[in-house]
Length: 309
Image 1: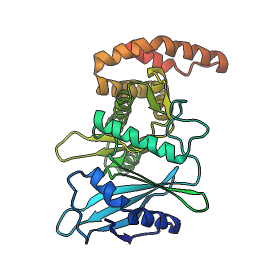
Image 2 (image 1 turned 180 degrees about the vertical axis):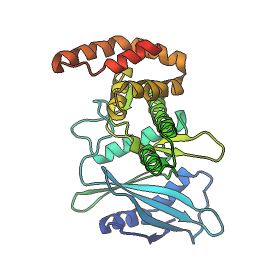
Image 3 (image 1 turned 90 degrees about the vertical axis):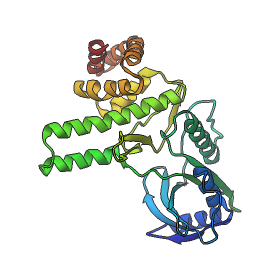
Image 4 (image 1 turned 120 degrees about the vertical axis):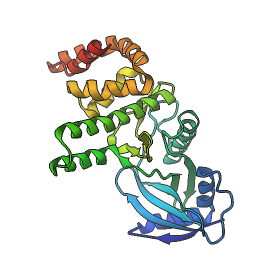
């Protein structure tokens, strides 16, 4: 069945039409049941309120709040790709020059299902993808995912900075909280790499794409909410270099955030074994960079590995 749609905020008219058509095709109700398996009976009076959530990036994101009478609301996100190519896989196995947004979204759906089985909670549950080809040949798509109630690592970093400037945190407290959330992000991305058989990794392990959920009395949990340009045939050398490029390559960051986050994910013993195995490749890459640029950008990383492992 279709849901009674309501609109809140400035919803793009074109996107409103796409979501309405997907709902008329009963896709929203089917996606709701897929994300929330316990929700198999949907009353006819169920309403879905659509409001903008994020308008930047390759896809525009809308929050969809489904309300049942006398029951808690269920929350989804609907993602609509912009009218340009989006990339979620970068290997010949999954992407060719003839790939379309349709195929790439299907690839993301399969990844979400895989991660749901091998790393529950690391990535939102996926409700599916709706596709439609218009008479003019243009295609329309909607991707539905579970809504994750959390705060991104990047926003938390800004929040801590504001608290430091307001005198609500000491410098020590600020550094501790900053390090804690960044370690959570690193550990989440290492779990992602592990769940993908240590062969696939994102080229953008951004702190914007990791949400931290704080349950009462429980350890904070990190969920990756978006995957960009997944690179295949990746080893730990690539993973560390991508994370150092995003989070920094200073000695204290490499030791206290990146390597510490790896240890958080796999344990110190296995982490050291992995780092020692990757060290020759990192050294070779550092020497090549030194020859090309005249500076050893990898020195802090290499020193940290030798020191800790």
